[in-house]
Amino acid sequence: MADMQDAIRNMLGMKTVAIVGLSDRPDRPSHEVAEFLQQHGFRIVPVNPRHAGEHILGEPCHASLQDAATAIAAQGGRIDWVDIFRRADDTPPVVADAIAIGARGVWLQLGIVNDAAIGHARAAGLLAVQDCCSKIELTRQLELS
Image (cartoon, rainbow, N blue to C red):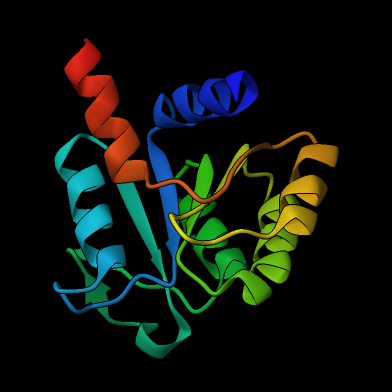
């Protein structure tokens, strides 16, 4: 558990986060979490092939994590970590993409568990969290500070 708490703390200290599976609907958890992160100083990078070319929360949405990383790199930045709102079975390719773009962490949201994907991320040197909500964890950190 200490390892996961360290990963949470470290990732929440990094400010550019790709939100994979970000919905354009305000009633969806991915939208609520992304908006909360954005309101607390994070730069969100929407990734959802259904909304590629559109804007979500004022940010351009990308078809893939690779497209997002390329766009951010063209602006002189990088994606620090990847917040994943996809079914557990869909997470391994997203984790592989996160490794490929040089992200420093992956975060599988509350209710999403894929030990193999998390193991792959950790083996590649990434910080990795699963079955945990970044909004809840950031709220905890803000309350402690």
